[in-house]
Image 1 (cartoon, rainbow, N blue to C red):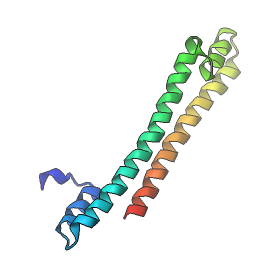
Image 2 (tube, rainbow, N blue to C red):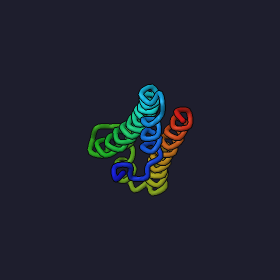
Image 3 (cartoon, rainbow, N blue to C red):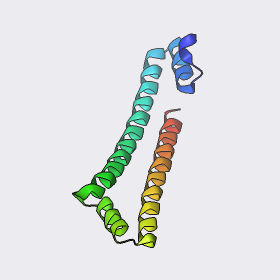
Length: 110
């Protein structure tokens, strides 16, 4: 059907709906999908808050952005690069963690 779009989870749901006890299997699949979505959203929300706090801190609210602004104003190039690299590293780790958690949840649900 056109609505499946080739996604494995949707194909699994469609197959379980056709099975003998499809209602219970489909609910289990939906629970796994909900948990997977929740984990991804939770980590993404933390990531957005971290980025926003850096930007807001740059304009006077404190935190990582405050240290970044101070370093930029005093022309401490090494410190600025270290702070920026730390921010990038934290964002990358959050993305990798999110992908790993979602993959583990998908494997557990399968």
